[in-house]
Image 1 (spheres, rainbow, N blue to C red):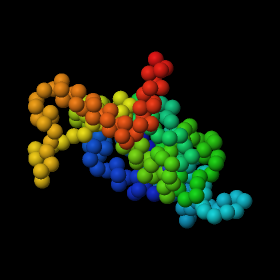
Image 2 (image 1 turned 90 degrees about the horizontal axis):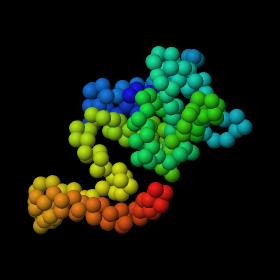
Image 3 (image 1 turned 120 degrees about the vertical axis):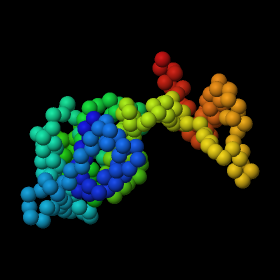
Image 4 (image 1 turned 90 degrees about the vertical axis):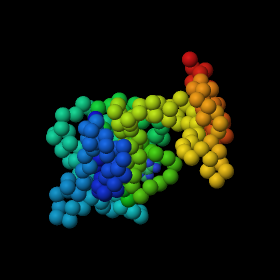
Length: 235
Ligand code: ADE
């Protein structure tokens, strides 16, 4: 998979993706992540990427030309299969694990990061194929949101996580939250690991995990159970 991120603040995106599992996935050539600086696609000497909004009002707007040039540059340089051009914005569609799974099946992704007050509407209208929000709150820009989406997609790519079963048992994979886990020591300050996990009875452990997963979901995210009922109704 080839991922491109167009941003006025490359360091904000690079940092989170240059550690741990994502860094290893890049090292193993499972994915390439190129971060393009919007300022490199300006052609004035001040490398200006933003300007005042027409009609007045507070806040600066990212100019359209650098985004168009950056995406044209990517498409001219690389052989890409009709890549999605994703704008990170709080006005986008809410991001979910299902969307992460479907993005992980695409071969190339281009992310555009808004910043400041917003981005010229022509970018949204003529360049962007999809808009994603990572939640109902407003960040200073789309950079951290893009890093979140990229992280969640790359960890699903085959080979990115050593133990693939680990990804299969994630929260949301079966519509439920994941069960609790324990590691050594067996007893810590009087707090004990549940006996069943030490029993070696795999079938019973599996049942305990399923029950806990359901219990956690009921207590913390009862709304998810509603989704499961709806999807069962559909089948
Ligand atoms: N940019 C600013 N806030 C955002 C959010 N919640 N999701 C995606 N991009 C954003």
